[in-house]
Image (cartoon, rainbow, N blue to C red; front, side, top):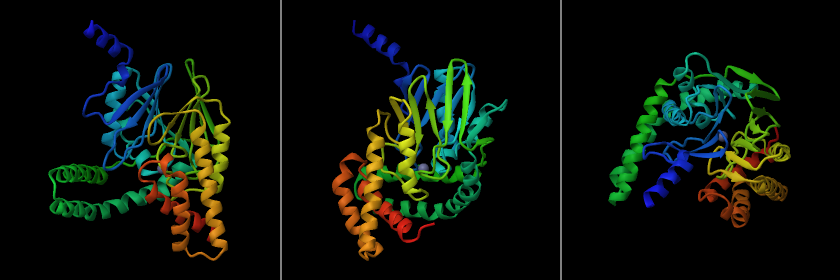
Length: 340
Ligand SMILES: [Zn+2]
């Protein structure tokens, strides 16, 4: 009886099973639609969405390195024999597009890599220099890890640093060989794919986390994929447009969906997270503008605004919030003091 129960559980939830060395936890979110939730890694990988179409598959985002995308491809092959014909890059950040090359090399017959035109340009203008810069800085990062390893006092600490070091060296190796693969199909506002019974709307709704973010919306399944415009961690704002981000989230929130897959963290439901992020950005900008108006220096703003935001929001974000919030206040201060 027990084994029968186990068997039927495996039958019911085949896709949630994963091997120890898998990089992604695959979770079905609608019929033929899966969230690939990235496991923690030294160099983070973003989540992916896997959307099975009539005769092919569309994947949203490709992680920080080709080997991670190839690992996901192996997991996709267990879900469906259909080839991946479409890849979407939600935006130009390293952990969302650096695995692109894995798809055309796995399906040489043809893969369209789709993004906004702004994202394609951002990869060329900013993404590629950042990769070159990282190739220069990685040896120091690896040296620091080796230094930390020597200083580690417990066996657990040693093992954790050893693992990070192994991942850092592997990442550096891939970075040097990376074949930067640009999107092959771009658009300004929206691109709608109709394949079999599936409709996939790829939408640019305004500037947000970057100037090129797209949302992938499945109107029939009521699923939205948000990249880093909305996710389960603390927002990274380095390349963002904070005031417009609020409006863009507002526009996305008006779509009719139940399930939300962000670029990081677990699958979310409903619209609460949209409300949280909008309120967070509003408070961040309002508080920073207020202390700036009173003559606060950047350091003073970082201290007072971060304290306020940490008290109000830390519990609703990831454990790194207190650190990330300081960077967000710096960004807010720059936007207010030096408007573009
Ligand atoms: Zn990002």
